[in-house]
Length: 260
Ligand code: PEP
Figure 1 (cartoon, rainbow, N blue to C red):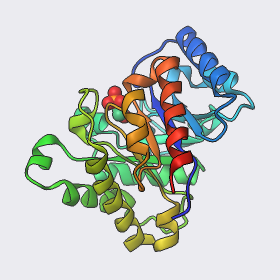
Figure 2: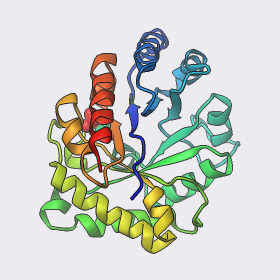
Figure 3: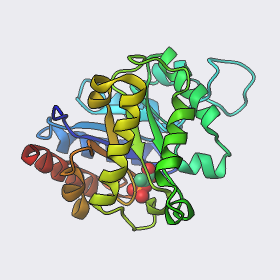
Figure 4: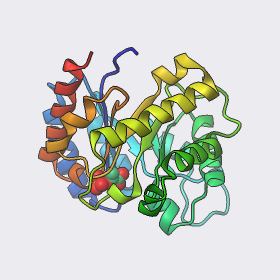
């Protein structure tokens, strides 16, 4: 499998005002200048997207949104559409994060509509999947991620978005300080790649970027990214400080360089 530059996305969730966004984005851009081997992506809240985009400017750092609505426009109070994200400077959008599934009743069918809407506007989806603790304990992990992939990617043709970006985020590891071991994560990542190969063929599956998310820190980033099928990270808590986020990027690049 061809090596892919590490893809490290920071999901800021409902954190950071505009002045805080300016500070954090500026610090990350400054530090990222000697980290060109990685694709660095920042996902601030909607209110700060435009300002983050202005600061990112022509740098190699990319912007992502954390959610979108599936319609382009209309009477959907409080929602934001894919063309609006594009307009604000977003290259990526996170779709189906477990917090959205858990607190906002997002379903695989809704995720599917959102993926299609994002693609229509050439905003690339980062599709989040992952099992709960109960599902893992019941040995249902593979069934759950297969089902989420099946539902989320329904009707989306191969090559519809290149590359495919999936974030495996075990719910029990998000914001809990519990990380999947590299072996646990690798087992699921390999399964996800197999599922993508079954659906789209070997080449798109090999090009797919499969991220791990769940309490990623500088201390565990190297071991996780050293696994064959782990191409990068979706980072929550540790992306809120420039130092920890950049340290994760450095560790990811170090692992990438040593990868066969
Ligand atoms: C996330 O929200 O996508 C995430 C992985 O959070 P954390 O890194 O804080 O576990």
